[in-house]
Image 1 (cartoon, rainbow, N blue to C red):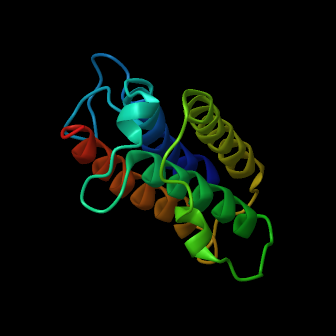
Image 2: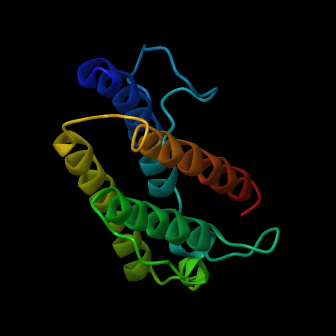
Length: 152
């Protein structure tokens, strides 16, 4: 069994940094200090995120990340049905309103994740990897979004 408080302290630091960015003046697990999913997405317009680069768009990367986060939260709370992951790539372009809604949806999904994690009483070999998978997956797509943003 893993000590809940010790595990959560470290996992939540990296989760928060991934989504919210590192606090000012604090060390960072990422090379770009203070940069997270939210600040990266806030700096981009619907027009920018709808431009294709390398066969994808930032809108598609963002929707996929949100879809993954939502499904993983479902798995953490008991979902066992298979997921059609192709559905996570259906959105490629967005209007201003759709972009605002997608960014807000990512924030709500993240808040839901934090609630789910807070409600887990026992961390063991069956679930300890779940938040780590979310961090790794989100970090990958954050990097992809930031790379695409350089060219739009």
